[in-house]
Image 1 (cartoon, rainbow, N blue to C red):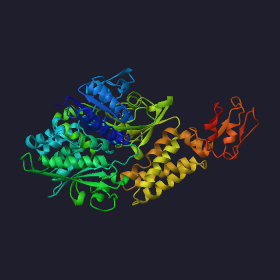
Image 2 (spheres, rainbow, N blue to C red; image 1 turned 60 degrees about the vertical axis):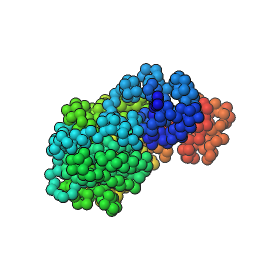
Image 3 (cartoon, rainbow, N blue to C red; image 1 turned 45 degrees about the vertical axis):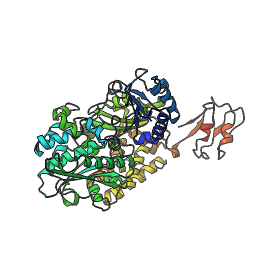
Image 4 (cartoon, rainbow, N blue to C red; image 1 turned 135 degrees about the vertical axis):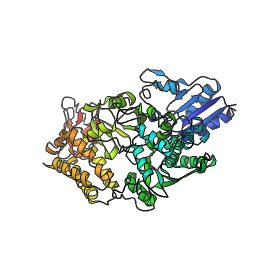
Length: 599
């Protein structure tokens, strides 16, 4: 008889930290102790607290172990699973309470990381075995599909989604119900449902985590969408760089077929629906819906002019709805719990919750799901624990390369679609990269624009040439070659590209540049007119100096300098020849007295 379950995170983050080896060692140790029939190992998806991975939770006690290593396994088995004594040194200690917590949902919800969250799309991630359809069904899985097919008309389903206020979680925020309404109204013998799982923003892993932790939620929602618009076929377009997500989707589709939840005559209602996978090659532009459709059709991923919109003429020229993973992950819960339940969360125009991948200069990197309208302060300081090493929070980039930087002065900004758009930023798919005082905002803008230049499909001139020209200017500025009028040239190019680019990628590409100019114009001016990087980040503008009051004259820096740029007399202050200095930083690393600084 099973007396305990050991949940081990099997998401990409913990897998990269060796969780499969931990699971294998646990399996071997349990067998060696004769406990293999009493203890069940469950491979789950992401728990969210990625900074503490690999994570292990032992039930029924609900003990939450963090940063587990292979060498910890024998002690956990011997002390906890055999003798019933938790290994205290590995138990998660909540920094807000300075106390250990158990791993059950109630206890975790009281911790600093989880207490401001509301898990709807992530409800099953870290809770169930994503490769076992029975566990999904035990969590009310496929009940929404049954309800839709047996108790609701297609119009009823669409009305429920409309009334819920659910908006697309892929970036644009278009009302999901209206998109479904347009597709249902289109007359055709063949229609399609497409899931956009081509998550390409730097630092974003929201959709991947849902697919890895709860793949059936997406399959069920796609079938509901198919019933609503009159489609019998769906495609999930997922990037091949997500091997765990792909494998679990394949398993989930196979299991759903075996249970009669995909295929012919679902629930005996005469409704047919099937789902196929299509693997993307990692082109960022294929996150744009028309480029994605072109790729599924077997052609090079390039955007198409709109109109006609996909709801009228989409995949293979037929009416098609396209929603991303997170959007679909909310659908079944809306059908089960009702539109009013979902609309009770969030703000007037941004209903429900939103998942964010919290990364960058933040203490608790991970996956968070918060009600719309939650402030940046709550996300960054409370949930994320603020910037590490005592550094000051400077800005946060939302929306990836298509978004913009929000400065520390606006940390009390509520996170919702309209507020961010009004600031010149955007929600995007949910990447949230935190920056501290050491980040140069001009360099940040250059990084994101460089990403766009690399990923542009090149089909339209504004994106292909305009973004390249902007990148050239930013590169000059960070190299100390900025010129009077560069800021104005960047703004002119940015506004032209926004107005004339063919697709959403090109139209939003200038956002990081415009946002950093808006909020950090002084940094641009310091680079251009003072030939100085205020953050001390840009190597070409860096200046290493020696404080004569602190210098002990030990000559260590002089002896280490690869270009002999430092001179002086032993036991007297040394000096750096700025004309010879190559900005390598060796002197800063060598000095033991804090006499050398980088400005």
